[in-house]
Length: 187
Image (cartoon, rainbow, N blue to C red):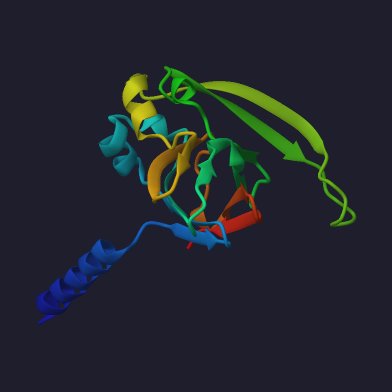
């Protein structure tokens, strides 16, 4: 009987793990609808042949223009921020991603006596981290990345951010659109 209960618990755990969806977020305004999903290292490796040693947070993006007006997609309109550490970055270029290493900038912020005041950087450390030894295929990464383009229909692509080992619930993606700014949180 104990084996039966243990087996049933194990099966339930496996089913729950299989149904677990990756962290995703959604934001929209009158010009665009944006869906972003955080990829696991395995999903990154399946998409571009390498997980790059886990030094990037990789988002799969789906950009859907609204209305009849074309939407100008610019990866530089996106900023990924960690609310836990204060670190933030725009997306990397294919040549930066598919190299043999990555530059990681670590900032330490001072305490704010007033939430309205900007954070002050107390110290900064720059480090070059080697990835898994396989730089990756720059052309394949470039092909999979979200590109500058004018879209009238939904477009998808990857964005690579140099933020590693962040909890998905602490990440916020900001996007500048013609209508203002979108703030996308991951769940």
